[in-house]
Every structure is written in C-alpha cells, then in structure tokens.
Image 1 (cartoon, rainbow, N blue to C red):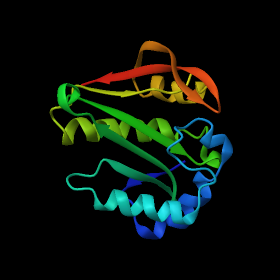
Image 2: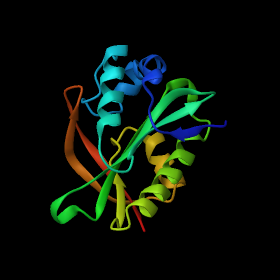
Image 3: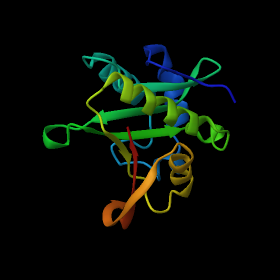
Length: 167
C-alpha cells in the first residue's frame, strides 16, 4: 500500500482523531496519548508539533491524502544527545500492509541525514507488542536488551524491548 510521510497540517485533525481513537492502538502506546482521542486532542497535538522550532522531527503517515498514523523521533539531551527515541503508531485498518516498516526506515534515514550528531536511534515496544518488534527487526533494528519491569500499562507491570539502529 502506498503511503506518504509529510509534515502535519491542521486539516489532518479529523482523520488523526478517527485513527487514534482506538483502544487496541492505545493499549500498545504510552499513556500520554489520550483515550478516548478527540478532534480537539488532534488539533492540540498538531498545533504543538507545528510550533516546534528547527527541522521537523514528527510526521504524519498519510494514505490517499489522509493522516492515518504518526511517526517521530525525539533527540535526547545532555550526555545522551547522540541518540534519539523513535515513536510511531498506525490506524488499525492499515496494519499488516508494510506501511510502518517503510515509514520507520524512511524516518531513520532522514534522522541520520538531518541530524549528523546522531549515532543511534532506539525504540522500546512493550513485551506483548510483537507486531512492533517485527517492524523494527524488518527495518534493521536489533534488540539490545529486554528492560525488565520497566513500565506499567493498564495497571500491569511490563517489560520493554530495547531496539536500536546504529548509523
């Protein structure tokens, strides 16, 4: 399936809310993503991303012109300023179509090109999110570690898998 990575637009709010408002999706993401996810949440997120200075680090994943997912990287600071954390999600009806693997590869390539100080990009999917782990593996990331009891989701203490891609 064809997709496009592009910067966010305010006109993406309705499709962002439609795709992000999904409990199955939310169960695999950090609690910072609200649930239920409303169009007001989408507008606030897009406005926040658009206000960030410097080169873009967060992108819409668009199919047929509609934002159906999100991907971004977050450069770390201080002694970790040579690394960035990758985060992403995709609307459920677009799962298992190869979109996310391509988006991860494309975003990592952009990050390494646009931010030459980066040596490593990492992601930490939950232990039960096997699909996300497979996406990272297909995109060339390697599992460096399993972080035992590193997070809590839905009241359950869980492990995170630490995947990295090196320049």
